[in-house]
Length: 502
Ligand SMILES: Cc1cc2nc3c(=O)[nH]c(=O)nc-3n(C[C@H](O)[C@H](O)[C@H](O)COP(=O)(O)OP(=O)(O)OC[C@H]3O[C@@H](n4cnc5c(N)ncnc54)[C@H](O)[C@@H]3O)c2cc1C
Image (cartoon, rainbow, N blue to C red; front, top):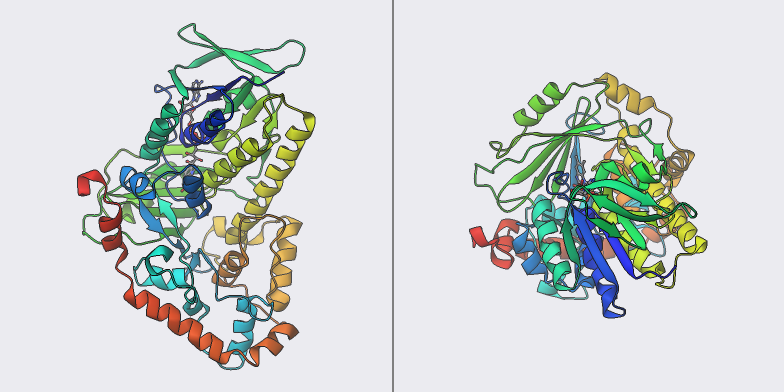
């Protein structure tokens, strides 16, 4: 069956990202693209921290960065600060960008480790631009200094999720996507193929299509309720299953820090996402060890300002849909799975999902090979991210609550155990296939959580003999650059002030 009508069901971040990206295929062929959403149901309303590939998503859509940032009250993000994870009182930053650069074909952190054993006391963080800028509250884009001898600045954004969906809606509608308001009542399946043929709204209107993108959030109206695809539950690895979200103002007038904060508590952790006009906050926790009231109290006690809305209580089950693409339905966003927001990977998975779909799509029809390729690649991507998230919980020395005792002693996937063991032996990290997280990401979290490189790499020992001068220069140039950068708040208010703050 040829694809002439694409129907996106759901208008949260996933729905509008899909609509915006898919609207561009209309440049080549005049496909009918509709998006149906229900204001009565609303969106999840959280999801404000992103990672660097999201910057690429804007560029691919030729979205003006300043315009988007102003419209979404956005700030820049250079990484995530994790506090109280390895042990109460400890803190580390997982930065975007690399520690140093490869020296003699060896990971920088392995050479640094050898140098440290030989008495060099400089912290690894001194060799990462994003960490240094974050710690000093500074920011610049690479384009501002544009020098080949200095490292590039890798960044992402903190955005107001609702405003971002609004921004993309405008973009998609201008490119021919038609929005319909309505709530799905019944879904129709083809009696022979089992494909979705359309659905009826409460108003009685029928929407038909050839390809459906399910962006209905946790409900999974098409992928689960209609097709019964099934869900792989990862709660035993990622046990947090509740969150309470609550924005607050920044009363003290302090500038927004250029990083997200993730602070662990006794049965979960709290996020702080600084926007231009407010902070987004939330407490992700495990209902087996904590009640909602307590989670809410802990959140309010640890917020930087007064709440600006009512608390939003959310429930979820960590895991993934057994098939991301089933029959003629592709699930994106929360309809496809959720691994909790610890490393801000959900919006990223929408981005890669829609990129994969556009790359593999042929309007001549859907083939089994397309579906299975998409599902295989998405499964790998989910599993690699899953392992990285589990690492934060597993690699802890905390023994001050039942929750942390569970996490510290839980069984984890063999793939993760192997990665930790190899790191312990000489610091080696292999980035597998197209996995999202870099060698620096793995090294930052492993070391930040207290896993040490026991031995050294013989290759690194050789390289370390002649790198002292190069390392001095690297450290100095980062310091030099950070010293000259403006404060992050100052940069944002000049570069992309939101209308109210302009
Ligand atoms: C606690 C928490 C914190 C998060 N933090 C981050 C983060 O920092 N970074 C990040 O990348 N991601 C984060 N996420 C994930 C992020 O919020 C989601 O990936 C993103 O918002 C996409 O949501 P969605 O569009 O899939 O679903 P939703 O926002 O739930 O949208 C669903 C849409 O489907 C529509 N719909 C549902 N049922 C029907 C129906 N029957 N008929 C018609 N329409 C229907 C709704 O009206 C709505 O428009 C977080 C998620 C949670 C739960």
